[in-house]
Amino acid sequence: MDANLVVLTGTLSAPPEHRSFPTGARLVRLLLTVRLVEPRPQIDVVPVTWWEPPENLDFAVGDRLWVAARLRRRFYTPAEGTKTSRLEVVAGRIGRCSEEADPGVAEVAEALDQPPGQPLEAPRPAAPGRRPRGGRAAAR
Image 1 (cartoon, one colour):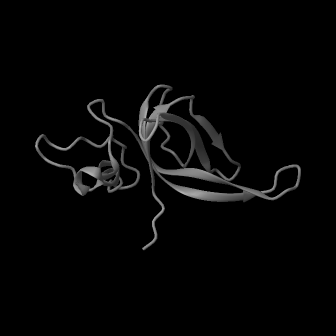
Image 2 (image 1 turned 30 degrees about the horizontal axis):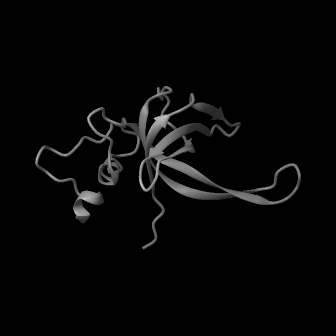
């Protein structure tokens, strides 16, 4: 079975950019700052596109977010006429990280089981003494 799953957690680094199209389609573009410590310190600012976001989207700069997405390659021809492509992170679900702990892969996967259209909530950490399903903890 093939898979195309991107999971990010990070900080919203710019106000969400909302766009509407004549067809009625809507999208929001977010810039998510992702700080890594291993194997070496690194900061990436990742653009995320979210088609048909909830109407009441209220994310603000500085919010800690998790993103469950897919990677998409888009082809286009810019004004100079040379066909080119770019990779895009296209979100399926986005939510706020809880203050207690950032969600891991297993928690985000669990959140994806929520029915579409339901309010997004940050996945809750596992109960004390209970290991989360999947992710690094299960691989040990």
